[in-house]
Image (cartoon, rainbow, N blue to C red):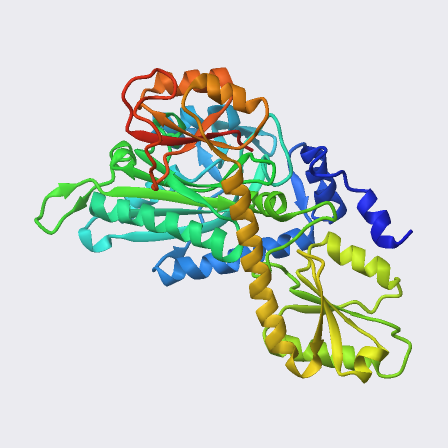
Length: 479
């Protein structure tokens, strides 16, 4: 039995038990370790390297559109949090409180930030006075704490890493444009870099972020048909500005309230990457955010010229801007193959004495297992092409899964009947009533994922009440 077979046996089949498969992959690929505090995990170097690559891409996108990075305090006074009633009510069950400083009880409880809207509002109150002070386009990379009752690695933590953008504008039109622009940025991140297709659109009112006027989301489908909210962008109008008494003197010399947005993605994206692309051998990482894009495995390292050639190939690929590593350990080739399959490295390069004689090497694709013979003289160009090909085919595979698991539903009974056999997204017409939305959730456990920008009128009446309906909603189970 090979090392590869032994390693694969340690992973539950994803089609047999998807939840256990996910846990197996997270642990066997050494992405996390558990800490002494339930729900607070340790991101091991490999997971953090993936997050760093996502962070680098996204931070570059933000800076291209004029955003600046800032950092707000970790602790929020309770009185400050109470200024926005909807926000505190929305987060109250998940808030962690600091009540003591050393041995002294604090005069006022301090909240460990679940999000930073109130801190930014306090800052805006102190710094925004004139139209010349606007807009302010801020982002911060930080961690937040939300005391989740049920936790799962990357998907729901009590502490997790994210970015949260906060902007403030002179007009509602500018703020709305900002909200949509960021939504499109998140969609580009998912599709161009993570190879994950998305559905974009506003949330229903009941699913809107506390205190927001409108919440827009990018929704993704996992391999098992469940949804993952990959990112959200919120338009606040002047709700927070009024609550925090933020005013500025406009060009016409009148006092006005500005308009705000906030938006964010988190390490939840790592969970999405695992659940969209992984298979029964472990991770499959999209090449554009993989810490290692190709790993070189020398075969018969003890034979003359093998290591020297392998080192030369590594140098060439690194010089070409391809993230490359080489395994010179004393483990067997079979063990190494299984190890890098588990870690989801997009390409593997095998080079041995016979390959060197023929001026060739063997390239193995992680996503398909296909073996290719590539001339050493063409290596840089061929690897670059292959990495793009892997990305494109991962994206297309995910698109096919999304299409195959998206169903039209014309009545609540049909929804329930299909759920007995299928898990996926359900397109259904909705009259706009919160009561109908709640009844659908109560009777099926499906939640409104979003109201997609790309509307398709599949019927004339609401899926629940039968009244006239013009809005199509995507319903689904969620992580």
